[in-house]
Image (cartoon, rainbow, N blue to C red; front, side, top):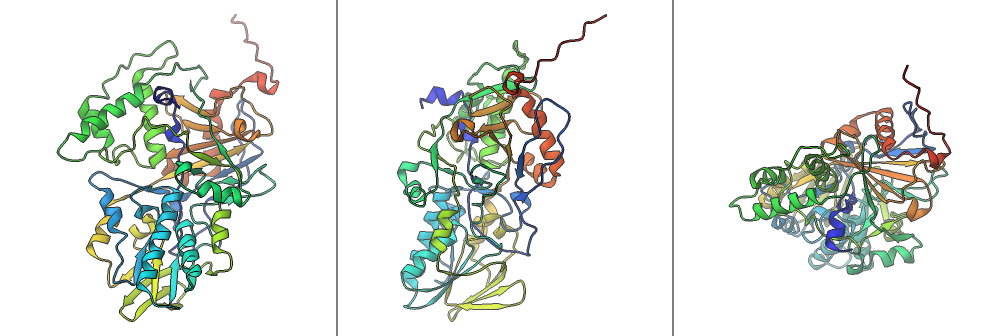
Length: 483
């Protein structure tokens, strides 16, 4: 994909929910599988299947993926990789400075932590791994293959962490409520591993389309990416890090016209939508929280990324096969000394090990759900407190037949205040009428706390923008003559 072509789209809004694993008190299951609520009166039909996530309120994740806050740095991720007295090792996407917030970052962190533990351990030692997500499963497999006695402790009933695949008769293919992308697939073996396991992986051609809430087509312009790019370039030259929001203001990049065009959309509308769909949705952070020094390049192409249409969690299950796993087991305290490690579970039991690899998400570490004795070093605590945990949620809707006629794979709604301005259309990819909405930041928090009816009603109201009567055979209403 050429740079200018990408600038007209919203591909960076098609992000992953990262990965990992476990901790506090036993939660109500999250993401939430639901019966289909009653939709509002409108043209868009009731979906035949409906699923929503609530990672933001899930005590085993407390968010979707880590991000760089204002004033934080990638070096703090590196600080988290330092072993603590060669007894406690941290892993997870938040500890990987190269690919944070991704499945491959989590997997790399698991390999790194396992290697550190192996270097410190003696033959036959017992090593505990807290969390059965990608990082934990990877570390456990490496340790087991090296001959160590491994036990995996997982707070949820299921394994996979923030990789959560749902297979049922309601869906024509497995849907992934967490991670569903493999970034820069040619630079890692993850796609090869998935294919070997029989998991379908496909290229995703970015074909964007923007409309107003009333369904009018919006002329594509580069107002949004140009403004954000200019803001980041301005911020790089500043003596201190500032947020993306402050960089837009300080650079003057937000000074765009508010005059509407023929479709009723102004450049200010375009910029606001771009920030929502291409800055907030991918990171889960509000523009006022996100570092401008370490923000991603808004002009990057994603041609090398792949979309998983099979059960992504198969790669986690394969690594855990044959290992000792304790599900529904929440670690509430970790005590470590020269003699070894003691893990206390919330139900009162204790486990002993020689060493432990902690792979719980950053949000869980920030919640102090695990009591470390002695406390983690200042560098570790400082990094945990400085990095951010992004809030990101999605809706997945299946329809009996498409109510839309566009072949666009990425839909955005410009102007107004839509609850779900970013959608991707999986029909060109799978042949099935399945749509996915993605929201981040404050909008994700609101969705997680709202009801199923609120979520679905808001989604269907926004999808009116893409309704085509010809696609469903619905006759176009005849206007009533004005007396």
